[in-house]
Image (cartoon, rainbow, N blue to C red):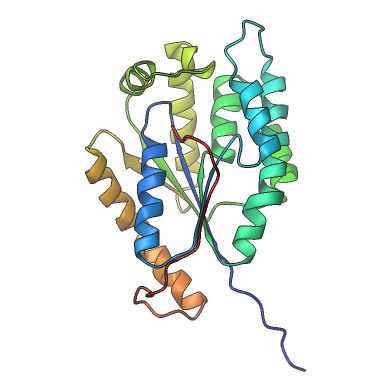
Length: 240
């Protein structure tokens, strides 16, 4: 019996960190690095990534004075994630692209779980429903002191509702991310975000390179960069 040919599978890389950690800048730089290596990429973010999910993002981060319950935050995030995974992430992986996502499931656990106090195992169960068990192959966690990150964010021209949370809240977020890294050491790699932008980018490249080699072998590709321009898709939004 002839085995059915399976299309090449892509690579799912998520970038996580507290506010002001520089992950969005590193997502852009990593995308540029991957394209120079000849890879097709899809660059996206959460919450967001589709027209509907971006509307949910706007509601979630709006600085309106109405208090938002922790459960409301969680349900909005999961609704946006289900749409994003179904419309963007799963199709891109199926065609063999490298998906770079600015925030994903770990942010939900860190913000709504560790910081807001919702039950983490419950959030993990809801996340499996929202993602259909799609899990990143690699998560880059950009870590730096909370005070440093908040100073960066609050000096920006635009801030959102989460930027205005207390120092204690953001300390819990950071502690949550670090605990998740301990729980999932094979997937989550901590990158110090205190260094210069270029130094951090080089550290990211060192982490990602072995996975790129495995992806080439998996898909039967030459290790040499190809000469034709790679396909790139980027969700039309301003990364922060």
